[in-house]
Length: 487
Ligand SMILES: Cc1ncc(COP(=O)(O)O)c(C=O)c1O
Image 1: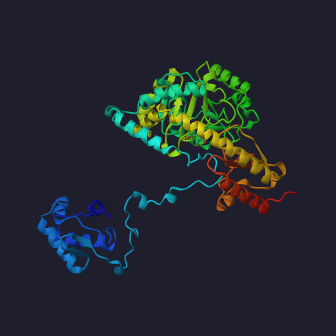
Image 2 (image 1 turned 60 degrees about the vertical axis):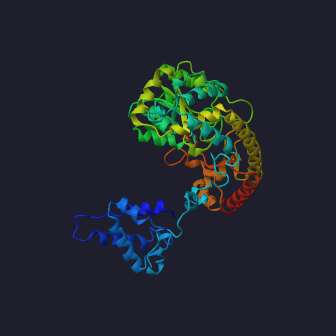
Image 3 (image 1 turned 30 degrees about the horizontal axis):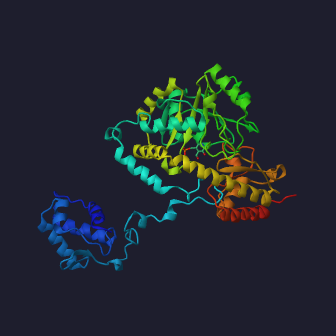
């Protein structure tokens, strides 16, 4: 622990100058407690009596007297020419706040306490290939160039240069033509969706969400006073025809059109066209979640609904959580021009958690060309991992599971074969799998209250290397052989 750290602990000293108890005695008592409770630990050098006197607004004489008292009692030791140090008082038997005084943040927080994802966890990007040096270079350049005025302003839809580079990126990657003013940078899907719910939807109305689907949609709707309408999917994606014809139709439809989350199929062209027609006719909204579109293995990503929708009723959600890293906490939405300023106003009203310096770093990183390079590298890596894990699972687990091939992304669905589905509880099996170091998710738990009738596992491949994947798949095989009988 450094002097600075000890000063922080000493800040807890509260002296009551009106008390009948002399200030010098109060100081001795409180320093004694800090030492015996190990809040300032053994071996620590105390600030000088002059510094401490200044800090506590006392005369130097009072501090010297308190130090002398504690030296006499054995709590402190004065070393000639070196300063005053805290003595070992562990024999007093008080529990230390922590055993070892940290030298730095990283001594204090063990890397493992950040929580590593288990092998085969879905939605987990690979960590090993992250281009840290180019990211840091871009971040440094960005930090030196952000105008200070931007650092103190309201969010205003996000860092302008980032919104500008994203327009080019979206045009080349997704065929989306938009102005920077149509892009709003947020801290994640939940912030993006909350803005939309608050500004564009009427409280109490229904909004269709996929089942199985992304639970954050359901949760955000409820938090914003809206009612999720869980809507089934089939091999063409979301089955919304019946839902839209209800007497109380939803005000919006949320859809992961490029690759349905979690099952992986794209929304068919015919359904995209139907959805766009409905939205335009009934002033409905389409919320297009395109969170992992960058990682399509065969050919360019499918055309987005946003790009197809000439009626301007689609709001597009993108994320950097998958292409870079989840804790960056940067996502964005692309909105039709006619509602952009209202959404920016809403963001200014409630504030945003998207850090401006991170936005500037990202903008510089994209401009440097490293972002596109990183995506290309990861696409190749994920395609290779997908083939390997898909083959292992097919070879080892096909007695129990029917694997749904996928065209990209981070995970694929493996559904229980019909007879198995009647007998097996995927949620219970997943708890057991986690205990065996396998991070799969239960399909039945994704989406609707009480579960959906699709059972099986969502299996991640992107963040798991070949060796880990082979071990995890064989663990799953053991688990299924022990707990699920194939008749
Ligand atoms: C289905 C789905 N949509 C969107 C997102 C993006 O969310 P965010 O940008 O808040 O990380 C994720 C992230 O895991 C996701 O799994």
